[in-house]
Length: 389
Image 1 (cartoon, rainbow, N blue to C red):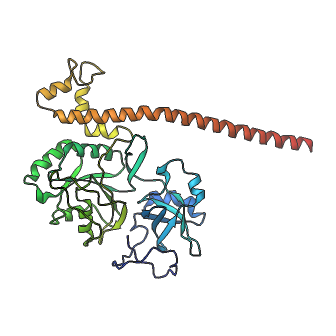
Image 2 (image 1 turned 90 degrees about the horizontal axis):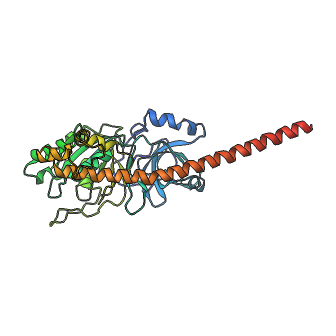
Image 3 (image 1 turned 180 degrees about the vertical axis):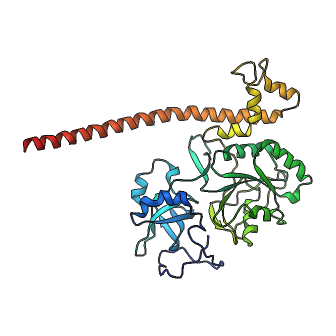
Protein backbone atom coordinates (compact mmCIF):
# COMPACT_ATOMS: atom_id res chain seq x y z
CA UNK A 1 0.00 0.00 0.00
CA UNK A 2 1.76 3.13 -1.15
CA UNK A 3 0.74 6.39 0.45
CA UNK A 4 2.09 9.89 0.07
CA UNK A 5 4.08 11.20 3.01
CA UNK A 6 2.46 14.37 4.41
CA UNK A 7 4.46 17.44 3.42
CA UNK A 8 4.69 18.71 7.01
CA UNK A 9 6.39 15.58 8.28
CA UNK A 10 10.17 15.34 8.41
CA UNK A 11 10.45 11.78 9.68
CA UNK A 12 12.07 9.39 7.22
CA UNK A 13 14.29 7.05 9.22
CA UNK A 14 11.69 4.38 9.98
CA UNK A 15 9.39 4.78 7.01
CA UNK A 16 8.61 1.87 4.75
CA UNK A 17 10.58 1.78 1.49
CA UNK A 18 9.31 4.22 -1.11
CA UNK A 19 7.94 3.01 -4.43
CA UNK A 20 7.41 4.47 -7.89
CA UNK A 21 3.64 4.27 -7.49
CA UNK A 22 1.51 7.38 -7.88
CA UNK A 23 1.20 8.93 -4.39
CA UNK A 24 -2.26 9.05 -2.90
CA UNK A 25 -3.37 11.80 -0.53
CA UNK A 26 -5.37 10.53 2.45
CA UNK A 27 -6.27 11.11 6.06
CA UNK A 28 -7.55 8.76 8.76
CA UNK A 29 -11.12 8.86 7.43
CA UNK A 30 -9.84 7.82 4.02
CA UNK A 31 -8.22 4.85 5.76
CA UNK A 32 -11.58 3.82 7.23
CA UNK A 33 -11.50 5.66 10.58
CA UNK A 34 -14.97 6.17 12.06
CA UNK A 35 -16.77 6.92 15.34
CA UNK A 36 -16.44 3.30 16.51
CA UNK A 37 -12.64 3.39 16.42
CA UNK A 38 -12.53 6.98 17.68
CA UNK A 39 -14.45 6.00 20.80
CA UNK A 40 -12.22 3.00 21.56
CA UNK A 41 -9.04 4.97 20.94
CA UNK A 42 -9.69 7.67 23.54
CA UNK A 43 -7.81 5.92 26.43
CA UNK A 44 -4.72 5.59 24.21
CA UNK A 45 -4.90 9.19 23.04
CA UNK A 46 -4.51 10.27 26.66
CA UNK A 47 -1.28 8.23 26.73
CA UNK A 48 0.13 10.16 23.80
CA UNK A 49 -0.23 7.28 21.32
CA UNK A 50 -1.29 7.64 17.68
CA UNK A 51 -3.90 5.67 15.70
CA UNK A 52 -2.67 3.68 12.71
CA UNK A 53 -3.97 0.96 10.40
CA UNK A 54 -2.10 -2.22 9.52
CA UNK A 55 -1.73 -2.53 5.74
CA UNK A 56 0.52 -5.60 5.53
CA UNK A 57 2.57 -8.00 7.61
CA UNK A 58 5.89 -9.63 6.82
CA UNK A 59 6.98 -12.07 9.50
CA UNK A 60 7.23 -9.98 12.68
CA UNK A 61 7.26 -6.60 10.92
CA UNK A 62 4.11 -4.65 10.14
CA UNK A 63 3.49 -1.89 7.64
CA UNK A 64 1.16 0.71 9.12
CA UNK A 65 -0.47 3.91 7.84
CA UNK A 66 -1.11 6.92 10.05
CA UNK A 67 -0.95 10.73 10.09
CA UNK A 68 2.84 10.43 10.10
CA UNK A 69 2.76 8.56 6.80
CA UNK A 70 3.54 4.93 6.02
CA UNK A 71 5.80 3.34 8.64
CA UNK A 72 7.32 0.05 9.68
CA UNK A 73 6.21 -1.16 13.12
CA UNK A 74 6.88 -4.06 15.45
CA UNK A 75 5.21 -5.66 18.46
CA UNK A 76 7.24 -5.07 21.65
CA UNK A 77 7.82 -7.76 24.27
CA UNK A 78 5.43 -6.16 26.76
CA UNK A 79 2.62 -6.53 24.21
CA UNK A 80 3.50 -10.16 23.49
CA UNK A 81 3.45 -10.98 27.20
CA UNK A 82 -0.25 -10.12 27.36
CA UNK A 83 -1.23 -12.21 24.33
CA UNK A 84 -3.60 -15.10 25.16
CA UNK A 85 -4.43 -16.23 21.62
CA UNK A 86 -2.92 -15.85 18.13
CA UNK A 87 -5.95 -13.77 17.10
CA UNK A 88 -4.90 -11.12 19.65
CA UNK A 89 -1.91 -10.21 17.48
CA UNK A 90 -2.38 -7.38 14.95
CA UNK A 91 -3.50 -8.43 11.50
CA UNK A 92 -4.08 -6.66 8.20
CA UNK A 93 -7.02 -4.27 8.51
CA UNK A 94 -6.59 -3.75 12.26
CA UNK A 95 -6.53 -0.30 13.83
CA UNK A 96 -3.76 -0.09 16.39
CA UNK A 97 -2.39 2.37 18.95
CA UNK A 98 1.27 3.09 18.20
CA UNK A 99 4.20 4.88 19.75
CA UNK A 100 6.59 6.51 17.31
CA UNK A 101 10.16 6.87 18.61
CA UNK A 102 12.45 9.73 17.83
CA UNK A 103 15.31 7.61 16.50
CA UNK A 104 15.80 4.92 13.87
CA UNK A 105 13.76 2.31 15.74
CA UNK A 106 10.50 1.16 14.19
CA UNK A 107 7.18 2.29 15.61
CA UNK A 108 5.81 0.17 18.46
CA UNK A 109 2.32 -1.31 18.37
CA UNK A 110 1.04 -0.92 21.92
CA UNK A 111 -2.56 -2.11 21.50
CA UNK A 112 -5.06 -3.44 18.99
CA UNK A 113 -8.41 -1.64 18.96
CA UNK A 114 -11.59 -3.74 19.15
CA UNK A 115 -12.60 -5.09 15.74
CA UNK A 116 -15.81 -3.82 14.22
CA UNK A 117 -16.15 -6.94 12.09
CA UNK A 118 -14.26 -10.15 11.40
CA UNK A 119 -14.49 -13.07 9.00
CA UNK A 120 -12.87 -16.14 10.54
CA UNK A 121 -12.70 -19.87 10.00
CA UNK A 122 -11.50 -22.85 11.97
CA UNK A 123 -7.82 -23.25 11.12
CA UNK A 124 -6.65 -26.19 9.02
CA UNK A 125 -5.48 -29.28 10.89
CA UNK A 126 -6.81 -30.99 13.97
CA UNK A 127 -6.70 -27.90 16.17
CA UNK A 128 -9.76 -25.99 17.33
CA UNK A 129 -8.15 -22.64 16.64
CA UNK A 130 -9.71 -19.54 15.14
CA UNK A 131 -7.98 -18.15 12.06
CA UNK A 132 -8.76 -14.58 11.04
CA UNK A 133 -9.30 -14.05 7.31
CA UNK A 134 -10.42 -10.40 7.20
CA UNK A 135 -11.11 -7.80 9.91
CA UNK A 136 -12.70 -4.36 10.02
CA UNK A 137 -14.26 -4.66 6.59
CA UNK A 138 -17.55 -3.04 5.63
CA UNK A 139 -18.18 -5.18 2.53
CA UNK A 140 -17.21 -8.83 2.22
CA UNK A 141 -17.00 -9.96 -1.40
CA UNK A 142 -17.50 -13.74 -1.57
CA UNK A 143 -15.77 -14.47 -4.86
CA UNK A 144 -16.71 -17.52 -6.91
CA UNK A 145 -15.84 -18.45 -10.49
CA UNK A 146 -18.45 -19.00 -13.18
CA UNK A 147 -16.11 -21.39 -15.00
CA UNK A 148 -15.85 -25.15 -14.57
CA UNK A 149 -15.04 -24.76 -10.86
CA UNK A 150 -18.46 -23.25 -10.01
CA UNK A 151 -19.73 -24.94 -6.83
CA UNK A 152 -23.02 -23.92 -5.24
CA UNK A 153 -22.27 -25.95 -2.08
CA UNK A 154 -19.05 -24.00 -1.57
CA UNK A 155 -20.98 -20.74 -1.89
CA UNK A 156 -23.35 -21.93 0.84
CA UNK A 157 -20.39 -22.37 3.19
CA UNK A 158 -19.03 -18.90 2.56
CA UNK A 159 -22.44 -17.30 2.96
CA UNK A 160 -23.08 -19.18 6.23
CA UNK A 161 -19.86 -17.85 7.77
CA UNK A 162 -20.28 -14.38 6.28
CA UNK A 163 -23.65 -13.83 7.95
CA UNK A 164 -21.97 -13.72 11.37
CA UNK A 165 -19.02 -11.54 10.31
CA UNK A 166 -20.54 -8.13 10.99
CA UNK A 167 -19.84 -7.13 7.36
CA UNK A 168 -22.18 -6.69 4.41
CA UNK A 169 -21.70 -9.88 2.33
CA UNK A 170 -21.94 -9.67 -1.46
CA UNK A 171 -21.64 -12.73 -3.71
CA UNK A 172 -19.25 -11.83 -6.52
CA UNK A 173 -19.52 -14.14 -9.54
CA UNK A 174 -16.30 -13.69 -11.51
CA UNK A 175 -15.40 -15.04 -14.97
CA UNK A 176 -18.80 -14.22 -16.44
CA UNK A 177 -17.06 -14.16 -19.83
CA UNK A 178 -16.48 -17.93 -19.53
CA UNK A 179 -20.08 -18.85 -18.70
CA UNK A 180 -22.62 -19.65 -21.44
CA UNK A 181 -25.66 -19.16 -19.19
CA UNK A 182 -24.97 -16.55 -16.51
CA UNK A 183 -28.68 -16.14 -15.73
CA UNK A 184 -29.01 -19.82 -14.82
CA UNK A 185 -26.08 -19.56 -12.41
CA UNK A 186 -27.56 -16.42 -10.89
CA UNK A 187 -30.84 -18.25 -10.26
CA UNK A 188 -28.92 -20.98 -8.43
CA UNK A 189 -27.19 -18.42 -6.23
CA UNK A 190 -30.43 -16.54 -5.56
CA UNK A 191 -31.97 -19.75 -4.25
CA UNK A 192 -29.31 -20.29 -1.57
CA UNK A 193 -28.26 -16.68 -0.79
CA UNK A 194 -31.67 -15.26 0.03
CA UNK A 195 -31.49 -11.60 0.97
CA UNK A 196 -27.89 -11.14 -0.20
CA UNK A 197 -26.67 -8.97 -3.03
CA UNK A 198 -24.86 -10.67 -5.91
CA UNK A 199 -22.93 -9.36 -8.86
CA UNK A 200 -21.62 -11.08 -12.03
CA UNK A 201 -18.29 -9.60 -13.13
CA UNK A 202 -15.36 -10.36 -15.40
CA UNK A 203 -11.83 -9.43 -14.40
CA UNK A 204 -10.80 -10.30 -17.95
CA UNK A 205 -13.13 -7.87 -19.76
CA UNK A 206 -13.88 -5.44 -16.93
CA UNK A 207 -17.64 -6.05 -17.17
CA UNK A 208 -19.45 -5.44 -13.87
CA UNK A 209 -16.53 -3.69 -12.16
CA UNK A 210 -18.25 -0.29 -12.32
CA UNK A 211 -21.15 -1.81 -10.38
CA UNK A 212 -18.62 -3.28 -7.95
CA UNK A 213 -17.10 0.17 -7.39
CA UNK A 214 -20.50 1.34 -6.15
CA UNK A 215 -19.78 -0.72 -3.02
CA UNK A 216 -16.40 1.02 -2.57
CA UNK A 217 -16.85 4.74 -1.84
CA UNK A 218 -13.95 6.57 -0.20
CA UNK A 219 -13.39 5.39 3.39
CA UNK A 220 -15.07 2.03 2.85
CA UNK A 221 -13.08 -1.17 3.32
CA UNK A 222 -13.86 -4.35 1.40
CA UNK A 223 -12.22 -7.78 1.34
CA UNK A 224 -12.11 -10.44 -1.34
CA UNK A 225 -12.39 -14.00 0.02
CA UNK A 226 -12.68 -17.26 -1.88
CA UNK A 227 -10.85 -20.37 -2.98
CA UNK A 228 -7.73 -20.36 -5.15
CA UNK A 229 -8.26 -19.61 -8.82
CA UNK A 230 -11.51 -17.64 -8.58
CA UNK A 231 -9.72 -14.49 -9.77
CA UNK A 232 -9.44 -12.34 -6.63
CA UNK A 233 -6.02 -10.93 -7.54
CA UNK A 234 -7.11 -10.32 -11.14
CA UNK A 235 -10.06 -8.29 -9.88
CA UNK A 236 -7.80 -6.21 -7.64
CA UNK A 237 -5.41 -5.54 -10.53
CA UNK A 238 -8.32 -4.35 -12.65
CA UNK A 239 -9.52 -2.02 -9.90
CA UNK A 240 -6.01 -0.65 -9.40
CA UNK A 241 -5.54 -0.18 -13.12
CA UNK A 242 -2.20 -2.00 -13.10
CA UNK A 243 -0.58 -5.39 -12.54
CA UNK A 244 0.13 -5.03 -8.82
CA UNK A 245 -0.56 -8.60 -7.70
CA UNK A 246 0.83 -11.77 -9.27
CA UNK A 247 -1.68 -14.09 -10.92
CA UNK A 248 -1.52 -17.67 -12.19
CA UNK A 249 -3.65 -19.55 -14.70
CA UNK A 250 -6.00 -22.24 -13.39
CA UNK A 251 -5.41 -25.89 -14.22
CA UNK A 252 -7.07 -26.82 -17.49
CA UNK A 253 -8.24 -30.27 -16.36
CA UNK A 254 -10.37 -29.20 -13.38
CA UNK A 255 -10.28 -25.35 -13.46
CA UNK A 256 -8.86 -25.36 -9.91
CA UNK A 257 -6.52 -22.56 -8.96
CA UNK A 258 -2.96 -22.50 -7.75
CA UNK A 259 -2.02 -20.48 -4.65
CA UNK A 260 -0.72 -17.13 -5.89
CA UNK A 261 -1.46 -14.63 -3.11
CA UNK A 262 0.59 -15.67 -0.08
CA UNK A 263 -0.21 -12.78 2.25
CA UNK A 264 -2.93 -10.23 2.93
CA UNK A 265 -2.53 -6.64 1.84
CA UNK A 266 -4.65 -3.54 2.29
CA UNK A 267 -4.73 -1.50 -0.90
CA UNK A 268 -6.19 1.85 -1.92
CA UNK A 269 -8.45 1.84 -4.96
CA UNK A 270 -7.92 5.06 -6.99
CA UNK A 271 -11.07 7.15 -6.68
CA UNK A 272 -12.61 4.71 -4.20
CA UNK A 273 -12.17 2.91 -0.92
CA UNK A 274 -9.80 0.24 0.32
CA UNK A 275 -9.65 -3.44 -0.48
CA UNK A 276 -7.97 -6.45 1.14
CA UNK A 277 -6.85 -9.31 -1.07
CA UNK A 278 -6.62 -12.60 0.84
CA UNK A 279 -4.91 -15.91 0.03
CA UNK A 280 -7.10 -18.59 -1.54
CA UNK A 281 -8.54 -21.21 0.79
CA UNK A 282 -8.69 -24.89 -0.08
CA UNK A 283 -11.19 -25.54 2.68
CA UNK A 284 -13.51 -23.42 4.77
CA UNK A 285 -14.32 -24.94 8.14
CA UNK A 286 -17.00 -23.52 10.39
CA UNK A 287 -16.24 -21.25 13.33
CA UNK A 288 -18.37 -19.29 15.81
CA UNK A 289 -22.04 -20.09 16.35
CA UNK A 290 -24.67 -21.34 13.92
CA UNK A 291 -26.42 -17.99 13.38
CA UNK A 292 -25.44 -17.97 9.73
CA UNK A 293 -26.66 -21.53 9.33
CA UNK A 294 -30.13 -20.47 10.42
CA UNK A 295 -30.10 -17.61 7.94
CA UNK A 296 -28.83 -19.58 4.94
CA UNK A 297 -30.88 -22.72 5.55
CA UNK A 298 -34.07 -21.16 6.85
CA UNK A 299 -36.12 -23.26 4.44
CA UNK A 300 -34.60 -26.51 5.73
CA UNK A 301 -35.05 -25.54 9.38
CA UNK A 302 -38.66 -24.52 8.75
CA UNK A 303 -39.34 -27.96 7.28
CA UNK A 304 -37.47 -29.63 10.16
CA UNK A 305 -39.72 -27.91 12.68
CA UNK A 306 -42.70 -29.85 11.28
CA UNK A 307 -41.12 -33.31 11.46
CA UNK A 308 -42.98 -35.90 13.58
CA UNK A 309 -40.02 -36.33 15.97
CA UNK A 310 -38.18 -33.47 17.59
CA UNK A 311 -34.84 -35.28 17.33
CA UNK A 312 -35.34 -36.29 13.70
CA UNK A 313 -32.06 -36.73 11.84
CA UNK A 314 -33.82 -36.23 8.48
CA UNK A 315 -32.49 -39.52 7.16
CA UNK A 316 -34.88 -42.47 7.51
CA UNK A 317 -37.36 -41.52 10.25
CA UNK A 318 -41.09 -41.80 9.51
CA UNK A 319 -42.91 -38.50 9.31
CA UNK A 320 -39.80 -36.56 8.25
CA UNK A 321 -41.00 -33.38 6.55
CA UNK A 322 -37.56 -32.75 5.09
CA UNK A 323 -37.39 -36.09 3.29
CA UNK A 324 -40.97 -35.59 2.12
CA UNK A 325 -39.92 -32.28 0.52
CA UNK A 326 -37.06 -34.07 -1.25
CA UNK A 327 -39.47 -36.70 -2.56
CA UNK A 328 -41.67 -33.93 -3.94
CA UNK A 329 -38.51 -32.40 -5.53
CA UNK A 330 -39.07 -29.25 -3.50
CA UNK A 331 -35.68 -29.57 -1.79
CA UNK A 332 -32.33 -30.44 -3.32
CA UNK A 333 -30.77 -33.49 -1.56
CA UNK A 334 -27.38 -31.79 -1.95
CA UNK A 335 -28.67 -28.82 0.01
CA UNK A 336 -29.77 -31.07 2.86
CA UNK A 337 -26.39 -32.81 2.87
CA UNK A 338 -24.64 -29.43 3.01
CA UNK A 339 -26.86 -28.30 5.89
CA UNK A 340 -26.33 -31.46 7.94
CA UNK A 341 -22.57 -31.38 7.33
CA UNK A 342 -22.21 -27.81 8.57
CA UNK A 343 -24.56 -28.43 11.49
CA UNK A 344 -22.38 -31.37 12.62
CA UNK A 345 -19.31 -29.12 12.44
CA UNK A 346 -20.94 -26.45 14.59
CA UNK A 347 -22.17 -29.07 17.08
CA UNK A 348 -18.72 -30.68 17.42
CA UNK A 349 -17.11 -27.26 17.79
CA UNK A 350 -19.56 -26.23 20.52
CA UNK A 351 -18.91 -29.45 22.45
CA UNK A 352 -15.14 -29.04 22.28
CA UNK A 353 -15.23 -25.38 23.26
CA UNK A 354 -17.58 -25.83 26.21
CA UNK A 355 -15.11 -27.75 28.44
CA UNK A 356 -12.42 -25.20 27.59
CA UNK A 357 -14.73 -22.35 28.56
CA UNK A 358 -15.53 -24.20 31.76
CA UNK A 359 -11.84 -24.55 32.56
CA UNK A 360 -11.31 -20.88 31.76
CA UNK A 361 -14.14 -19.91 34.11
CA UNK A 362 -12.58 -22.00 36.88
CA UNK A 363 -9.20 -20.39 36.30
CA UNK A 364 -10.80 -16.95 36.41
CA UNK A 365 -12.51 -17.81 39.69
CA UNK A 366 -9.18 -18.95 41.12
CA UNK A 367 -7.56 -15.69 40.03
CA UNK A 368 -10.42 -13.71 41.57
CA UNK A 369 -10.00 -15.61 44.83
CA UNK A 370 -6.24 -14.97 44.85
CA UNK A 371 -6.79 -11.27 44.17
CA UNK A 372 -9.44 -11.16 46.90
CA UNK A 373 -7.13 -12.86 49.41
CA UNK A 374 -4.31 -10.49 48.49
CA UNK A 375 -6.58 -7.46 48.90
CA UNK A 376 -7.82 -8.77 52.25
CA UNK A 377 -4.27 -9.32 53.51
CA UNK A 378 -3.28 -5.84 52.38
CA UNK A 379 -6.30 -4.29 54.09
CA UNK A 380 -5.72 -6.21 57.33
CA UNK A 381 -2.05 -5.28 57.28
CA UNK A 382 -2.95 -1.61 56.91
CA UNK A 383 -5.46 -1.85 59.74
CA UNK A 384 -2.85 -3.46 62.03
CA UNK A 385 -0.33 -0.73 61.26
CA UNK A 386 -2.91 1.94 62.07
CA UNK A 387 -3.84 0.11 65.32
CA UNK A 388 -0.21 0.00 66.42
CA UNK A 389 0.11 3.72 65.90
